[in-house]
Image 1 (spheres, rainbow, N blue to C red):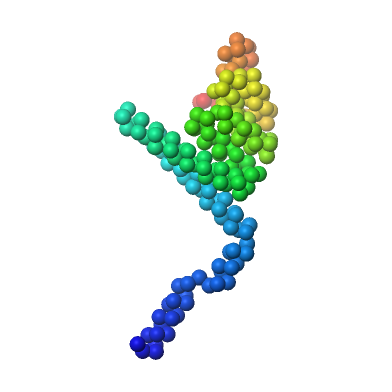
Image 2 (cartoon, rainbow, N blue to C red):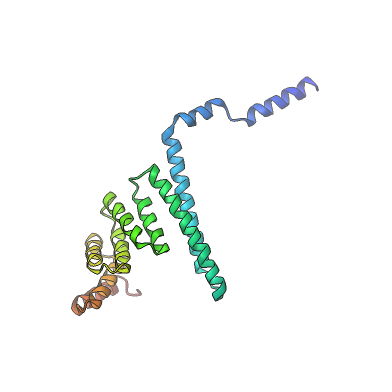
Length: 195
């Protein structure tokens, strides 16, 4: 082998291998490693939830629909695992707790969804979405009085939350409190006429 060919091969080898200083730099920064793992877990979970939603939104025959529901369910289960990993890395992330709770809702596991919404609210009590979505989970569990309280809070935080008005109106109508139900429906329509 000629000297120039040998030098060329050595230079290619040197430039293709990450430097020792880069490897030790990443290993020496545990916060960066944790942040990268956190972002990877969330990214993976979001991707799985998006894929599950696309699968469920497909217009297909009944047999294919059942198959798609099973696939989506598995994707949501995998997303839960990813969110739990992200939660271990950063237990104070509103987004992780909220998204985990929403994924539990997709799985129909309201018993686990409610505490996850509660943790999200504990982290950031100014987010009306968490109160409204926790109310829906409570409705599914038959906890109507607690659901109304959550919807009251969601409306107090964001008076333009037409969904919360509509949901509270529905609960009030069910409870035979027609006057409040009508007022809530009117508020929802006033905020979003095409709702």
